[in-house]
Image 1 (cartoon, one colour):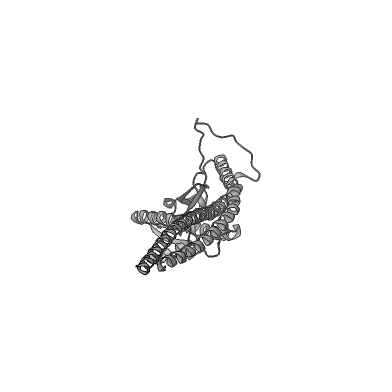
Image 2 (spheres, helix red, strand yellow; image 1 turned 90 degrees about the vertical axis):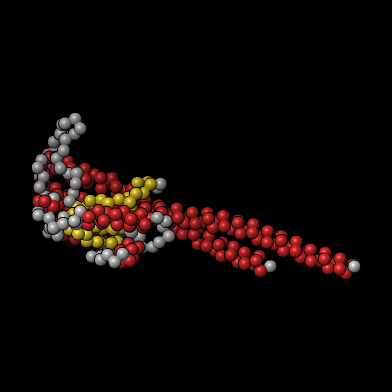
Length: 295
């Protein structure tokens, strides 16, 4: 009887866990739907801003701008900034582990090349990881939560723009989980600064794009749009990271719920076998007692 009681208690505990994981799955699904609308809604704007900047650069021709400078143009100090975007909570499968492994690999590569890394971390999981690795963190971005606001990200971007144009950093990179689709998310390292892909380029057939007239002039527009490109790129990274986190948590909680359901069924079968064995034993004892009395 003791074994059957233990199985019943365990089955009850698993059922309670199943209720929790099911609820967390539903919450993650609702958050994912909300995050997905933001991430997908802002991507066309981010891409269009970069496309417009590229068009302006082609119109100007030889582009010179502080946000486009290369390390060799300013002497360089072999220092780069790395922003690592992780989550504040766990139970998201391999989400944080994938981003942190990608960031750690990038750090090793850069240090092997003689670069110094200044770490900036968003998310408690990333902070805990680098503290455990005894790697100093220059700044934490705790103000950016599950629903990133552009004004918060804009302040961070302005800070990096100031440090980059002041030649404190040769480059600024972002490590995050890029949201491709609901079924595909990839940990990536993106170069935030210097801006790439805005130099004057030709079409594959060797011809240039059409020439446009700009008002105000293209150079003035470029001064306005280049910082905006940096801000939107960083904001998009935070949105993609948040959306990917909710997808990972949704999948992890669904898997946990399914496993709990399988465990309940397995424990029920164990309980039935234990109960059947107990009944058989009791019947044998009764029959033995009857035979003894009859004898």
